[in-house]
Amino acid sequence: MHNSSQLKNEFIKKWIQGLQIYCSSKKQMNLLERTKKIKLSADIALASAKHSATCWSKAIISEAKKDERNTILINNLSDPKMNFKCAHQNLACLKRIRSRKILKKSCDVGIKMKKMKPRRQVSNLATCIAKRLVKKRTQVLKRLVPGGESMDEYSIIKEALDYILSLRVQVDVMKNLVNATTNFE
Amino acid sequence: MSSRRSRGTTRITDEQIVELVSKLQQLLPELRNHRSNKVSASKVLQETCNYVRSLHKEVDDLSDRLSRLLSTIDDDSPQASIIRSLIN
Image (cartoon, rainbow over all chains, first blue to last red; front, side):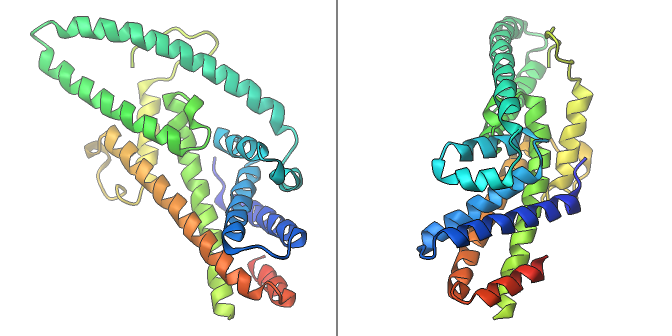
């Protein structure tokens, strides 16, 4: 279950922490660098506020870890337990995807044979087109959701649901901060 | 979805997927008003992709705006801490 207000509070706390870390490290930053840091700290704060509950949040953190410059930030914001779970789950996911792909290929051959029958050709075609569209859209969604590449259809929809809700929280908080800063001046 | 035997993982039913897709539809601003039985899965997925993209863009825009705002008050630390307390 997605608890928005709890996520919001966690996110705000961690994001402020992240911003403070950046403020204390370098005084002089150009606009582009600062924008990147703000966005990065927001993303990492959002992901770590989930406490390893979702795949997308783990994917964001493991992606950020690849850059050494983010180590301080990640160490301060996230739980160290996340490491081992992530790799193991990804491997299991990839194996599942591979076996599904092999299965799908053999099923597709079966579907092609069935299509030869003249009677139900029309309805099969419509279903085929619908399936292809869904598959195409699912591929796009997999690229949009962090860590989506190694997910099956059911998981990607579940993750997308949670990801959208969390992104909304992120946008909300950032908007409030921008408004507060603007009005203050 | 064809039924398949998978070792150790539970079989996902079509109903579960349909339920997820309808939940997704409730979230999307474009499709919330439509009646659920009239929207196809591919349309829901397409709108989901568009929505995620627009949320990403909003985050980028807000980061940019914040960056510009914070650059003007960076030197003045009391202001920055006041803003922090405003948010908390």
